[in-house]
Length: 269
Image 1 (cartoon, helix red, strand yellow):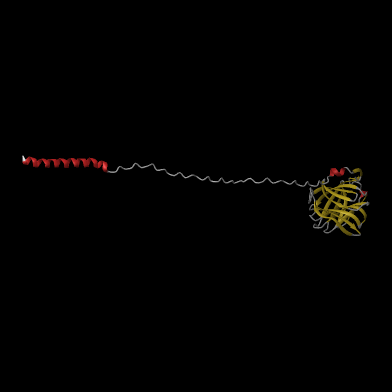
Image 2 (tube, helix red, strand yellow; image 1 turned 180 degrees about the vertical axis):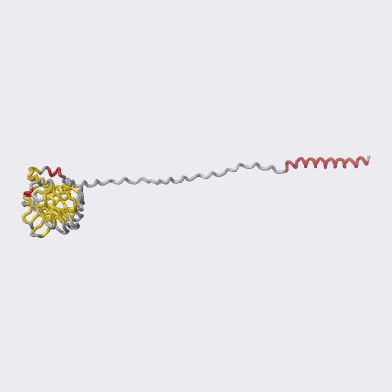
């Protein structure tokens, strides 16, 4: 009996140890700390700063346009026609008694078929043909110039209000397309309008140009091919003869024909 009593505690001890071991094993699973469920991570969203829009073509104030000055209207042939009345001279250069002619080594002045031809055969030489026509104080004169041979500086002229061979007015046109107005007094030349380029003129040779000289109350106006050129103040209360002129300046020879001369009375406006 004693031996059985001694064995019973041992058995109990062994059972207790086994029970404790099993309990510890089972509880060991619970002892390990449970992993925390990760909280969702919120990624900060960057707020975009609006990029300023570049105005490549900024608005600018609309400029106030100033009115352009109106050009001063130039006289026209139609305007002058209002003062032109009676046809005083209609010369087709068939009446050889109306113009001086000449023949020389320097050159010739001769009638052609309805023209008067001035032909110069030497350099630095001039020819003048005086007519029987008389110009009143107020007149409008037209004549056609036909150059068949000339150099740029060679000159063609209309002499008007001739009082003598040393007292007259002279309009010069050169073969480069320029014009000049002079008055000759006592053999001295006074320039009223220096060389000025002509509008609508045909320079050189062969060329044809229609000249128009309008004179009224001391005003002179020049027209070439119906185009106004310039205006100058000249003498009042004057009249006189008419002549045609040619001169070589840069050439050794020159030929010009004058045709269809008309002279009108002008009534001052």
